[in-house]
Length: 222
Image 1: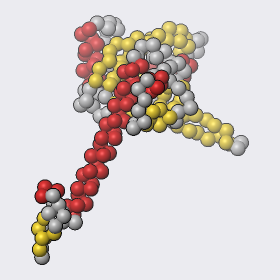
Image 2: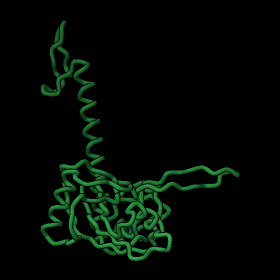
Image 3: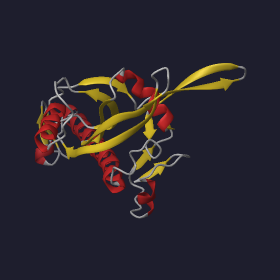
Image 4: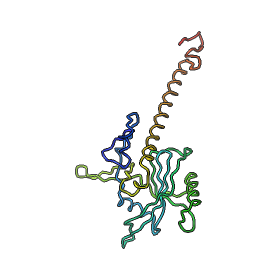
């Protein structure tokens, strides 16, 4: 898979190891998710000091526990820690290029991340039983355009600076992006094939008899 982007992320080097031009990831709509931007996003947590982050690429999921470790005198988040709780695949879910959300699970008690609790969280993600608090795969960029400001929406976060890069295997996320574009390509090719067959059948041809079919008035030979 070839990545098109003037910016880079922690998994980009793999494209030079497994060179393949048949798949292209146009990532020009990317933005750098810094720790400062992540702190901005964490303000949705409110007075709580911890919550969860869910990342999805194609049909692969990563669930993180994020904890605010420092606030200023306005109670604004200044720093945090991230812990990877689980990663798994679910092909029953709709594939996504990338989804990245701060989420919450409605439950009572302490944050005890034992095996049973994590398995429960996975089941709840698979059944959409959680609350999305903030989409962090989106950033509004303000640019000065000839004296006036315009907004540009970016929706592919670069993860190398936010503290997640050292928690995710770069090969895993690279292959998940590659899988997404591979499935997209297969679906497109299948759609084209079906469309071509429909066109042939509309004009009286039958794909089961090598383009030989009967019509009123005689036989059409392929």
